[in-house]
Image (cartoon, rainbow, N blue to C red; front, side, top):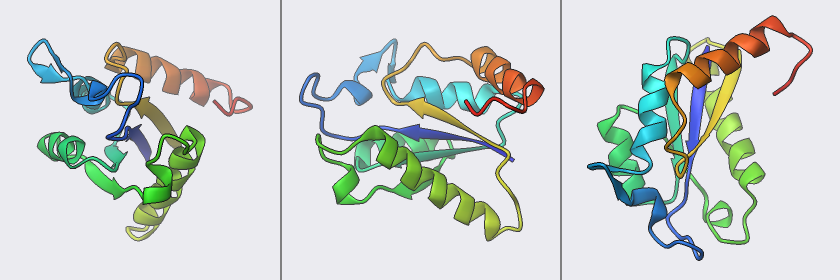
Length: 134
């Protein structure tokens, strides 16, 4: 399976509330969710967050939720640690269904310019070049 993992946390010290900022009638975090769902290649969308508001948006897009631990939700926490936690949670979830993860598409809540075409092109490139890891 190809899954998308969207990560975003509640607290931002540089731009508070950015992930939920209303942009053209939608919260900023909705755009990467829409891109994943519109992708011809992504089978499932997961969202890792500490934010109840981002969770609500994710549920409206039928995303599967990953509860982010407090230690991965601080401004000191590294994005790669949140990504690794999400990756492990997704692998475990798929294994419980007898499925395996082929590729994981990492998306950020504050990246509204990603679209399904870019996701599908990236997945295509990775499938064509088995030596590439990202």
